[in-house]
Image 1 (cartoon, one colour):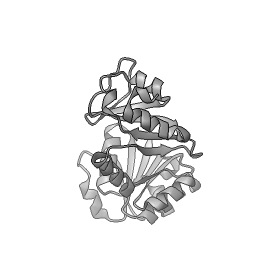
Image 2: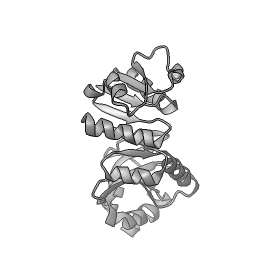
Image 3: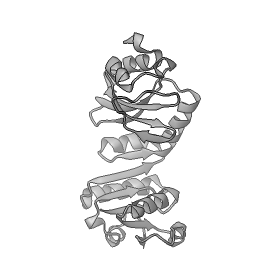
Length: 220
């Protein structure tokens, strides 16, 4: 796959290195040529100096043949403009933009451009560690019907099978984060202290799912 990245800061550099390591064709764009100094000498991808939403710059980066585009520069406006050009002008199917303003992120999400709201995500993650209660929504489908959420797991579920949690709550466990590593639950997976459980459920079932996760099987 050919992937174009806008922004050679810490996130862009990490993305470029990881995708390059995986064997993908990568072009990274930044208007400051000094930014490319952060790239490892082992990086085999292409560097392009220019404004990220400028068509000539994007074409030099191979946007016309790109399978994906990630806008992760430090500017919300630049990221969203570049994402829209990639999607609407060049037909790139997989497009994502990093947005610092969560209000803007919600608007562009509704327009069909997936966004990562940096401030909101960071704040949410900190709150989950300080007050690990309820559900933290991580994704909603465009209709708002189905959501993916990290739901706090009460102590009464520890030592029980993940399948029992699914059967009681009616939610589908998408994955579990254990010791910082994501894993797909198996039929014999037992829930452990410290597990972060990410589930799929309908928005209308959210309150019930939260109660069952927090208080145990008797809530079912």
